[in-house]
Length: 252
Image 1 (tube, helix red, strand yellow):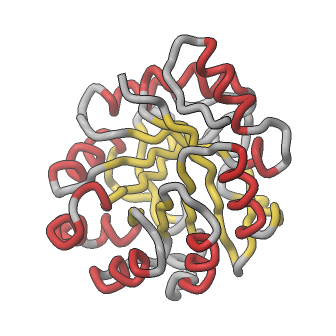
Image 2: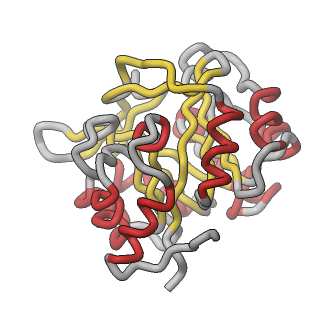
């Protein structure tokens, strides 16, 4: 079995790391370069850098900030937010990113996933899927930082995104985001049953045990406030995951 990954998320707004609850109530959480250095030193497996207002504000991603983060870490870096064209992907990769994450643009133009995969390989294409559960129990996809509902269901869009060339899926439950109540395990299990690419679970981590609980249903867990607020370290989390019998990468 491949090692399960622990991923730190840097949600960026105006060059600062921020965090909210259910995608609202945004607060400052620190400097992206300082946090990136901390998590790299702690042994996090990857970083995800998301410019969360680039799409909703209809502006370009902060390339300079991406370069600063990329220059200070030695682990895979995924970057998303405001990526609308293959040229945008190339700019992000040239700035030091290893993978590109798309959400709103991929839904607006699904062929963008295919074009990106053809140019840079599926291993570079991460499709981020923000979802909210409806009264019917169905999970509906949202775009523009969780501001706009679509007609897509999470399961259908996950399958289509992979068919179009996505090499990885980042699934965020907006209902669980920032609540520290645990991940949407049922959702991850449903998507896991339908696709064969790596899945990253996002939204809801409140304890190290929450991470251990979701990882049997996915390949990686994304964390933000637990790490930003220094409630837990990366090694605290990995020790719990290891104790649950799941393989993780340890760093001395």
